[in-house]
Amino acid sequence: MATIFSSHSSLFSSSATASPTTSSPRKPPKPLLHIPLSKQPLTNLTAAISIATILSTAPPSLSDTTTTTYQLYYGTAASAANYGGYGGNSSKKDSAEYVYDVPEGWKERLVSKVEKGTNGTDSEFYNPKKKKEKEYLTFLTGFRQLAPKDAVLNNLALSDVELQDLIASAEGLSSEEVKDDKGQVYYVYEIDGVATHSLISVTCANNKLYAHFVNAPTPEWNRDKDVLRHVHESFKTVGSF
Image (cartoon, rainbow, N blue to C red; front, top):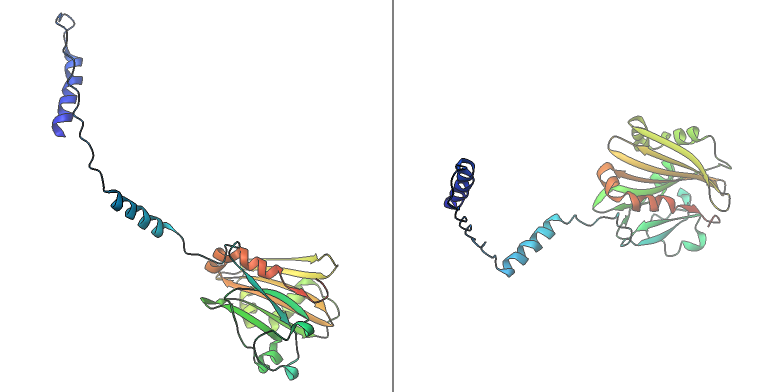
């Protein structure tokens, strides 16, 4: 290969230094040698392409909504005195007060009577691959209508330490009032924390205040935000859908 480029270089050199008085015609340059590249066996090439494709393919995530399926959860918002503490919702449909979607594969965490009595948690589901990626619902009795948005969020934080910390460290917090097609009013909050993202939907019905939370660590939020927003928007009280 060194000989090839040396010969080529001499062609350009002699062209530059040739005397204009030379009458003898210049011999045409010898063609460069063609050195064929060694062909890689097809089977090896195919295997190499397959390996590269596997390595470059991102792992599947919940964010692919075309492959994500959901189960509709029926929540009863039963008082602590009437709460049995058992999972499942096969017999809850007739007495349900609210519903929301749960991604296929998420697990239900059983809520204790003590927890239900202290902070009003009624139901909770989580991603078993990342337990801090979850949705849950709390309720409080004795509310006929929603107070101002700021007051509602602060009151929810009084009985939720995680929410207190999230608000205190928030890099961004937005709130808005929305109505569904039946006129039901919902307060919608989005909190962008340092390490956690949260979506909250709050409404009043049946003389109760319902608050539905969807929380995820920032990496999971960035990966699954489409599914998590779907879950957030699926929350409704019975009678409003």
